[in-house]
Length: 387
Image (cartoon, rainbow, N blue to C red; front, side, top):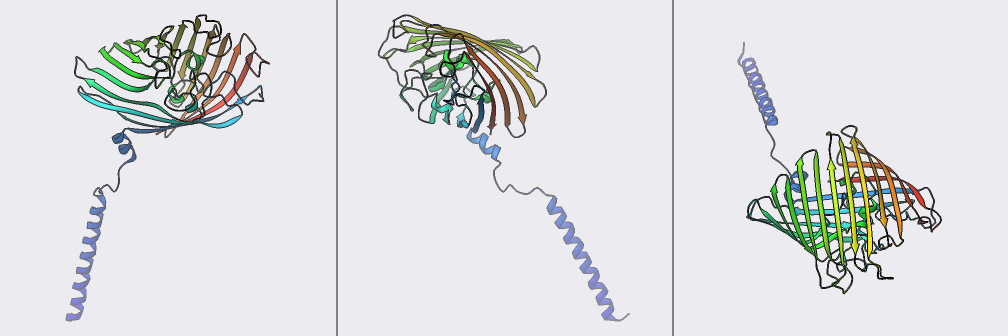
């Protein structure tokens, strides 16, 4: 064999060896974890304590009112119209250990924001947030600072503007069983308070909080008096929880007498993992609360909600309630109202919730469709997304 042929054979073997070594190195390199090229959005959200919420829907009123309004409804008052109910940004830093501080800021926009304005902060200056719709579609719904004092198990202080602690429902539909809000939430209780809250958990089964605030939906006080409140939470077992709430104080403009008193009870019973029963009762009085006659005002109501999880993705909720506006100071007309609502729920992947809903409202007087009817029926589709 001549030297040229031997050289070609040796060169070919060396080339194959280099090719194989290179291929193996490339494979090994590909199997090694690659360094992160960016931050995970969920990690950013968690680190910043930020979340987003969007809610919208369509409500059809079978009575076809010329006003295109669902009478005696608040957040879902628009009839036969698509609408952006609520767009929220929430930034929070919770307090979890003694001697730590935090905060919460919740900014809201949309139709719902027009109804929850606190006087003195934004929107139309209304005597009551339930008295009518404001014009400003932006609202600072919550803004407060927190401190957990190292006393016992931790005495928590919250100072600023907070959502009310009354009622079985909240402003955001996603945290309720139904798409529309109950009569009790709309008319029996306030939406927000501005002031100081002090809370202490004595045990896992008993917690108490005390409140000193400007009153009902007042960012700045409308008189020199303050409203005092108390909330007691009792959870003796996972299947039963009760919250008892009370508040009393002057709410009339430039008047420190004539207190308004509100008692509220919410009981949650879970006989099984899939079934929940929520009961809510409210009773309120206000000294000389009827402006036209000087009579004491009274209103009260009761509601019951049943929610059953059919599967991990499907649920069905039914709500029934009654509300007695004895003097007409909350709804504008002395009347007794009832409503029942049926709400299926579909939970899709990625934080999307769909809620078709049927609702029937009725009164003992002609309160619907410009005084023509004693009842109204609506069919709605609510869409909620959280991130």
